[in-house]
Image 1 (cartoon, rainbow, N blue to C red):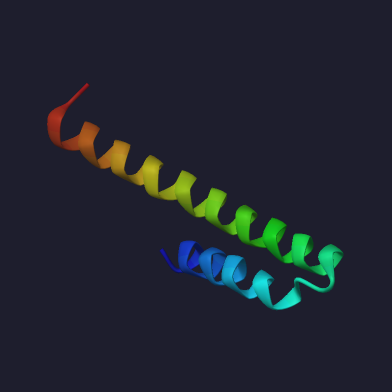
Image 2 (cartoon, helix red, strand yellow):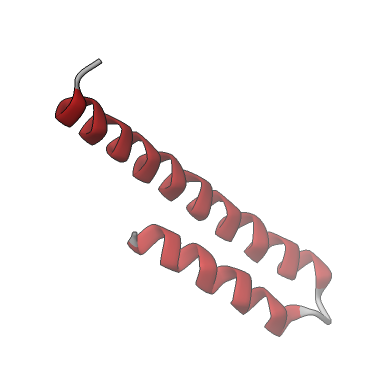
Length: 56
């Protein structure tokens, strides 16, 4: 969850660099990487939990 929050913060932070598009896009890419990784971990954890509770 912390990585998802950090990714969201990077998305907001990128707005500070609108006059420097290369830096803004770089910050967006870092944020998207964090959000993507966090999303994968969250979904995998939920699926494993659900399979453990309900069975295959």
